[in-house]
Each structure stands twice: as structure tokens, then as C-alpha cells.
Image (tube, rainbow, N blue to C red):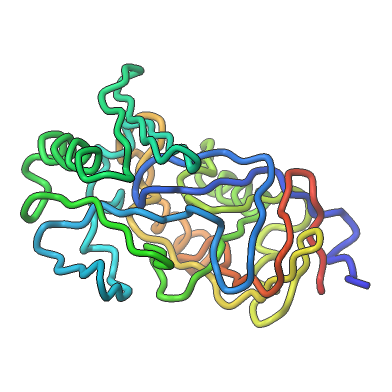
Amino acid sequence: MPGTLCRMALEIARIYRYPIKGLSPESLDRIGVVPGDGLPDDRRFALAHGSSGFDVSAPAWMPKHNFLMLAKNERLARLRTHYDSTSGILTIERDGKQVVRADLGNQTGRMLVEQFFSAYMAGETRGNPKLVEAPGHMFSDTARKVVSIIGLSSIADIERVARASVDPVRFRANIYFSGGRPWEEFEWVDREIAIGNVRLKVIKRIDRCAATTVNPETATRDMNVPRLLQEGFRHIDCGVYAEILTAGEIAMGGNIALA
């Protein structure tokens, strides 16, 4: 039977996926998962720079600088997006108003999205941006298919150092949990954990980049999180990556334990 990680239960507080790399999160109550993959539809699409050379017929992992991303393109945070997995419809809102509604299952819909970002991100793209997708491919910041996990206690410790509120969404994690000690998740590296009936292997800590400097509500760079981490904790890491080992369901309120 899985052993508890500490005296205080660790409980799933938030679940997010990011259907299009660099764009807004979608909150989930529960999600089914399978071994060797990330959350379904997480980082399924990306907006590639026209010069990236990404080949949808032979997809290979590429570093994030080949795509529009918050680390360099904070204007993306002004947009609110929703992708309907069933219909394939993507909606984009700017300042509370819908600006795009497109079916990503056909070329016309993808072209509408590309035309919008070509205009919206004018001056920040290398060639015309292209909406890319490849079956089985995940546009993660790491070459392995993973889920990202962060303890809210760790973010509270960053707030202590920053003397300011820190929105967890800055870190664009898939799973946030409550309870436990700050930075407890670092102790799980190279170990297996269980979330409900799902087993995962924690593979590494996540080093943080300039994307975390962007306020997800105002789209401004208002906090140098990597510097706060370095000055306060002598590292620039927050959260861990884990690989899914068994099929099952991850749900809000589920517990995390050592497997």
C-alpha cells in the first residue's frame, strides 16, 4: 500500500492543461491518463515561427525558442483561449471579446488562427507563424512526455521571499497540490508516487525561465522569479516533472503518496 509522504495529507488542488503551447490554461476537475503520455491535449498544438523548420510528417522535439512562448512573447498572456477536444473548436478572446472561433480540424480554421497571430504578434515572429500539430507529439519544454507537479507550499515560500502574492499559474504546471512542506516535491526525484490509482515516476526538478516573470493576468513582466529563486534558495527550480506509468484518473481532491 502506498505510504503517506508526510503527516499532512497532500491533496490535488488544481489541474490544468495547456492545449496550445504558450497560451492560457484550461482548468480540469478530472482527467484520464495513459502510460507514456502527458495529460490528454496538453501542449497538443504550438505556434511555430515560420523559420522553425518543424516537420509535421516527421515530428521531433525542438527547443521552445522555435515557437511563440511567454519567455519572449508576454503579449500572449493577454489572450484567453479555449479548445473543445470534442468539436475541435478553438476560441480566442482578447480583452473579454471573442476575436477568433475556428475549427482546428480543417485548413481554413487553422489559417484563421495563423492570420490572427501573424497580425497580433507582428514584429515578434520569424516568418509567418504556423499552427502545428503532429499525432502523438507533445510540445513540451522537455523531450520526454511528462506532467508537471508543484506544491502550493513551495509557492507560498516564494511569496515569503518576494513579500508579494505569486499567482501559481505563472509556473504553468499541470498539477498543484496542497499540504506538506515547502519544496517537498524535490525529494521525490527518482522515486515513484501515486495520485489516486495512477502511478508516476518523478524524473527531474524544473528549472525556471523568463516565462515566470510574466503576470498571467496583466501580461506584464512584473516579478523576476528566477532571480528570487536564486537569491532566496540558491537554485532556480520550482516543481518537478513526472512520467505516467499506469493508466487511471487524476481528480481534484485526490491524494498523493509514495508508491
